[in-house]
View (tube, rainbow, N blue to C red):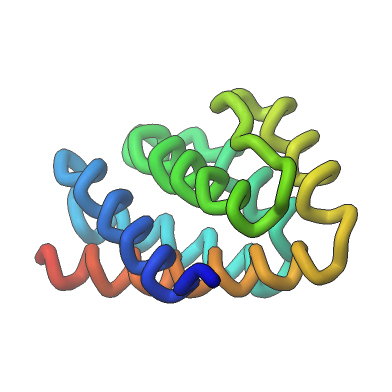
Length: 127
């Protein structure tokens, strides 16, 4: 069985490492907003949120976060392959491979929440 907390931590470390050129406060801010959307509205809304960012800083950070979050899904949803970084493909992927099964949806939501929490802490620790 996979240690999902370890996967969340490793993914958060990747996100923090790939966003070193952005201010840590900007990484923390976007991760916090994405976490809020995820908790209040769900996985589909969080994915949509991460594709809708238009600010300069968010445009640099959002692709990293959404790409790494989507890469977490295949081990949690048998038969799924992470989609290309294109909004329509990713949203279809979420609908077909995540939202179609309640157990998978809840598991993905939980792992994404933990990952985004770790990203927030990692960005703050980076200073």
